[in-house]
Image (cartoon, rainbow, N blue to C red; front, side, top):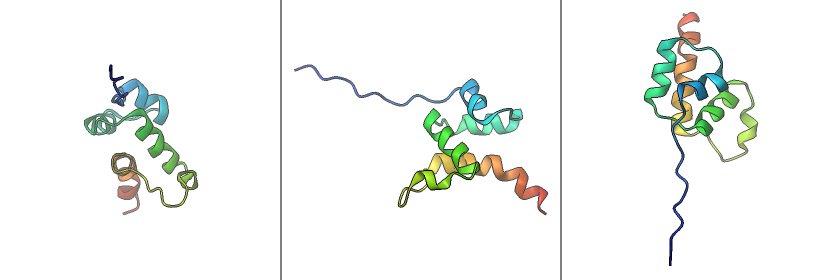
Length: 82
């Protein structure tokens, strides 16, 4: 019996990241690329940052990598608040 390989998520490219998150400085882009996120994780972080947290539904928290992306993107906002 032949097994059908499961589809494995691929890592998002710099173009994918900019396509979802818009213009980013190189430092943030490189930090996000270093996390090796999938396009879905980038989209989750974008939704979270846009205030659409309720789209995740009850009991579905933001994933770890998407949370790390949010932290990278929110770092400047925290520094500006000081």
